[in-house]
Image: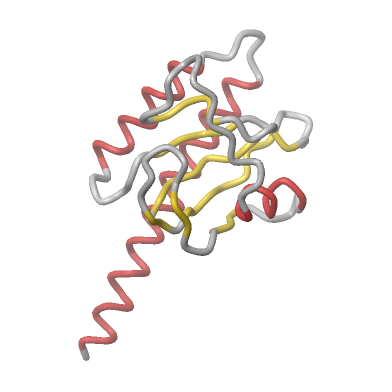
Length: 137
């Protein structure tokens, strides 16, 4: 295998892990949204568990349908961080058939670091947009 082929393989595996973690987190959030009283603390705990299992991932978070970060690493109750204007959020909000999206390089609002965001759509049980699960690369 050439160096380029090894790098390609490693990147494929990295993005597979990202998609898997985002899918697990999104599905947990969707289950909570189906309950009469969603437990966002449980969603945060799941995000932190996934991060511990996949240490090469940055912090995992979820937003609500308005774009407010509501659970995950670094999300503090009472502190509003909104991402509704970000391209990855808009792409997933506006296209119900789209499952994943990524941003161009940007400066994150929570950490101030440069990153590319990778996100997965979250839906209410009736299929309406409920927010996103997101991580930084």
